[in-house]
Length: 135
Image 1 (tube, rainbow, N blue to C red):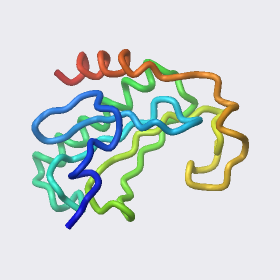
Image 2 (image 1 turned 120 degrees about the vertical axis):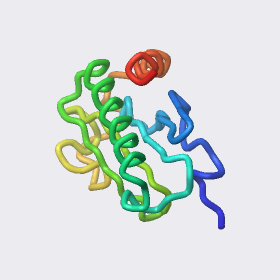
Image 3 (image 1 turned 30 degrees about the vertical axis):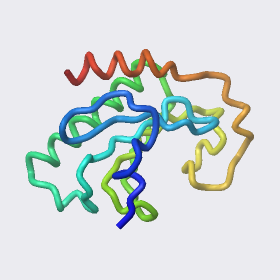
Image 4 (image 1 turned 120 degrees about the horizontal axis):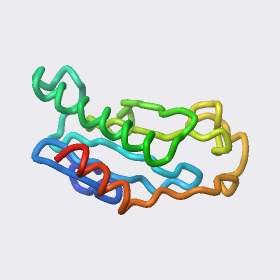
């Protein structure tokens, strides 16, 4: 079975441990868009042990905290969908009032062009802040 999150990193690697990795997703209009990806091929949160679930959510919450501190978004969206890629991962998406879809979900119809967003997320700074928060 081919799985793109087993076979590829899934974005620019910012941090990893033996159980999961955090990647930056290059998505125009969404600076700081990250994914927390469970390394083993697992479909659902309930497939994890209690300890593994706690570990994964600690990473998701740390990523949220770092993104809030670094980027000061209007909101953070957390989503674990995996309908197209049935490999457990969480989207951690900083939202800004000028992002292409705000206030709608990022998968809704665009409200404005991606070029309207005038900020970038420095991935080196994000990686450093994540390492400080998680190591």
